[in-house]
Every structure is written in structure tokens, then in C-alpha cells.
Image (tube, rainbow, N blue to C red; front, side, top):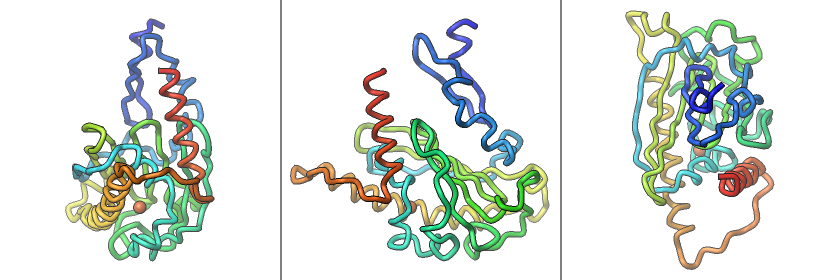
Length: 238
Ligand SMILES: [Fe+2]
């Protein structure tokens, strides 16, 4: 296959472009993800809502924030009420794809923890009680819920600002219902997003200070260390 044919690939409804002159075959680069989330049927879902944020923080701080939840009890009271921050486990813990699941002790991640939406067809029972979170290097954050899928797509706008497109995807039958509204999920995550952007912007101010000295990683920051290693690998490999 010619290099230009290998440079773009579709996975679960998302398009990926490799700018390398000699792109690594997608199936090889994405091997840990191929088939991993097919039970959500993401490629068949349709966008029900989108919000674009402009965050005064470097994109890497946003990925790092997404990759740990020990900040959750402190800044996300709404999320912590629905999903215990110590629950779940990581099932991708090294390389360019990082994340895992957390337990959901309500039926949906919405303002009141409920939803009139059915779980996505094809999801096994254990996944109906979980939310999966994956950071897909470099700039896609994919959150898989029982009844919808959410994506954050990060676009750096200089070293100190990131444009974040947050999108919510629903089953076509759900979207076609006359009483469909994405608002319960959108309001919940808009609140949570803004809480995260606030601390990311504080972190940006902190690391931009002449007084800043990097400290050791906390025990709950294993995925952050892995992400930083992947970033350093990408810098070296081009
Ligand atoms: Fe957060």
C-alpha cells in the first residue's frame, strides 16, 4: 500500500491522519485499540450536541487532568456522587493509549444520575454500570458511557491555550425520538468540564511561574507518567 494510502484511517467513526512521510500502518499503530470498544457501536452513533471551549492551558495539562481522578472529590462533587473516584481499574496502562473504567452507581452520568435513554445495544451488563475513559495519543479523549459516547478533541492554540471541542454521540433511534434531549448529559459534563478547565488554567499559571519546580509524580499519577513518556518518545521519533 502506498504511503499516502496509509496516512489516513477510520476507527470507530473517527478519522486519523498520520503526517509522517512513511506512516506506520494504522492496524499496527492502533493494535491495542482495534476491536476494544466495538460494543459501543460508536461509528453508528450520531452527534447530539457540541460545545467548544477555549482553555488557557497547554494541551498536555488537559490530557494529564483527564488521566487521573484523585482531583475528583475536591472539584467534582456532582461526578463523585455518581462514580466513586477509587473505583474501577486501568486496562490500558502504557503506550499511546491510556485509560480504563470507573464504576457508575447510577443509571447514567447526567445531572440527576438517571436517563430515559436505553443503554446502547450490544453492551454487556457489566458495562452498563461503568464509564470508560481513554486518552488516545495525542489529542482525543474518549469517554464511553452506557447510553452515550463523549469525545474531547484538543487543538493547541499556542503553548498556553487549547481549543477543546466536546461532542456527545447518541444512538440514531434515541436521537429520532420526539422527546429527545441531550441536555441532561450535556449540562452534567459542561459543569464538570468547566471545573476541569479552571484547575488546568491554575496549573498553567503554576508551571509558567519562574518559581515553578517540577515535583515527583503522585502514586495516583501512573498514567500521567506514561503519557509524559509517550510524549518524549514522540519528540525523539518525530
Ligand atoms: Fe476532572
